[in-house]
Length: 338
Ligand code: ATP
Ligand code: MG
Ligand code: FE
Image (cartoon, rainbow, N blue to C red; front, side):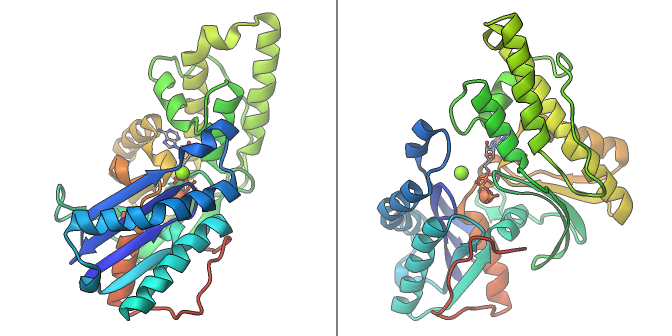
């Protein structure tokens, strides 16, 4: 059974091939055009997807040594994401499924981020992933969710952000520090040389299992404004300490709610997913917390944290087994819910 998967929800054009449950190729073209604008420009994203998609799919098939005519199904990201960007991947997948007369599978991008834990590849041929049920903290550029996962295709959001995503908080903080987009990985890098307790930043506490990250962003803005008034080169003089303190604050906000979710559900297996799960501060702190609490902690490989088509292929694989196919009348949904 061979699945070709296409991801085009935001600013990476990606295609992957999965053969009998194992990833054989995962090609990712990241769009660099957005850097000069300090964020993703939707219209430019869709145009770049159009420019990249033929080459990316061809490369994925070639690397996997698979011919188009060998494919069993085509999977694509239906949402959530940018409409113009999603349309490119969806149209391409539909045309391929139609031309080859094979089933078409729609995939929810946020479900796929979670299912990245089940990806098997040449390096890890028998990846088993967490047992069920488990709690997944999905942290990305557009989402911050606590998800209860009862089966690969049975997931429920039990808590989420009421405003900004944590990835946005990382990126916007980085922008305030004058770092280029996307700033999350740069905060991570500078934080490694800094003291996480150097500066105390105020946080907003949401009730229950929900998050809020818009307040911290404003707090950082005022903090930097006040400090720069006293010392115009405050940022340049203290960059590692500032980054470490921001990262520490955001990670603690995430782990506080995760801990509550674990206690409330009594579940002892926990995973993280999404672009921010690449953050080294989060990975280290979660491993430590898991040890203290006696949880089984699952952290994805770096290449499967940020957007990639391998996770779409994995979701497609589970859906293929259930014959969960869609027709040519399917359209992308920018706000597709989990
Ligand atoms: P969504 O999945 O919600 O639709 P997205 O697909 O744009 O959004 P991802 O590609 O999963 O998001 O993640 C991108 C985000 O991850 C960006 O905000 C980026 O800054 C952040 N990120 C990536 N690596 C790191 C890191 N090491 N530390 C902190 N943030 C990081
Ligand atoms: Mg991206
Ligand atoms: Fe994503």
